[in-house]
Length: 228
Image (cartoon, rainbow, N blue to C red):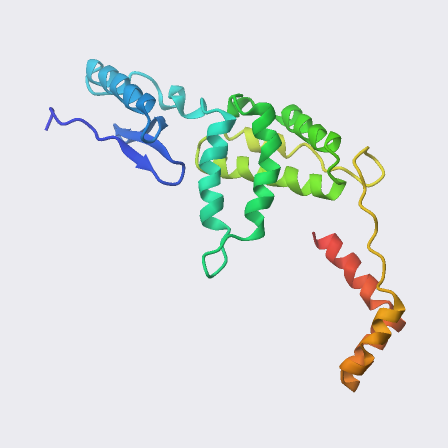
């Protein structure tokens, strides 16, 4: 079967085209594109000319030459399939990820993903600050960007050093940045609480009074913030 050529396959997790040569994966670009077919022809030509062996080591293959835009596109397919409710509808996290990646694409879309480091991530965060995003929302958005590169690392789309480097960028601390702070959530007016007394039973009202007397409501809210 020396005349048989390896087929062009599709990696469903990343949306890229690949060839299996000598038991190794060789990626040739986005699936279904003319550029991927041309790269396939080039790689196969070199492979045949080299006696049906890879002319370069695996680490010299174009695996890590993807742009940030290509990483975002591959990750977005994962996001749309992963963040879904039992009925198949998307969760709110889909839109959260979209917002977080928007400045990344705008500022560094054409940058090689392998070259996206903490300085670039800090520049993205500065864009968020200048755009008026709140500190807590910025921290969560930056974590979503890091999560994308963690996923890309697990798929071997970027070098293994990229994600650990991004982790070195700490989150914004309260009172130690110029990011906007959200107004604190204030307690519900006492008149609103008293108004529901006629609509709840005795046990439920006792729980409301217990929360008011002991400050459970405020403590619970603080605990939620710490977990987030």
